[in-house]
Image (tube, rainbow, N blue to C red; front, side, top):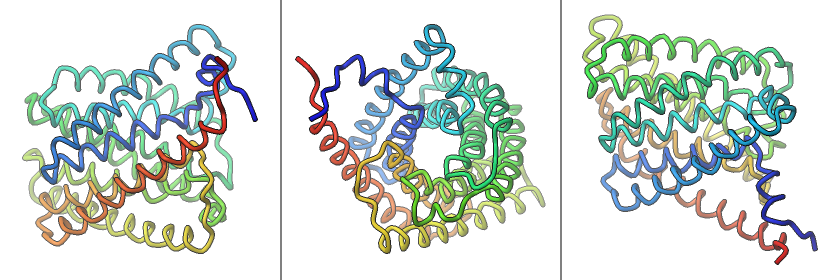
Length: 315
């Protein structure tokens, strides 16, 4: 039996662990949208606690292990730092904590360009699903900026959100061209981001559609793009679900949190788009998918505990 000390466990944290923050944060937002506020706050507390742990780890590597920091900053998983910060900020904004959410937006926006450029410089072909994090991180900024525009009265945030939204669409297309489609049946969990990136795009589009800043053909175009990207994300959902049934991958992997996040994001995008687009049947669909995401989160956490049980810390 392997023995793993607490210090070594901390040292082995992967940037991919940021997907757990994203998963808990977006499930919290979805639960808020269906009125399950107690569960929503519980999920938010988990997301915030995990974010603090990973933020401390991020800072420790930046200040104390620059070689490892530079090596990990080149990988798409590093962009979970941006996406997780934006998702957490979005949920805190919904709670009314606008100053904190603005601070998280500033932090995410400061991290985004350096990490994005580092990842793009090391892109290749036949990449795993983590490649789509270039889109997820960018659309995360769009979601948070559009959420903050109305309560803060800063219209420039809405315009910045639109710019990030358009860039995110371009980054998705580029990631899709580089994606190794064999990952659909062999991926360790992050292959689900191929669909989740479209879901967060739809969520960003939903926020922009609901904004009074955009009228006329711009509003109509945003609504159309929102519904198209949401439809494509649901198609990905179906394909990936069938692939999981055909080739189950039950073993725990930290990248499995990158499966839970798209499940929660697709559900939340449906719930949000139901209001902004006026397509009523998206709400019951989103509610069902949200509970699927909650169940998947519980199963993934149970698998994590089982894995930790096989790795007992030294006393």
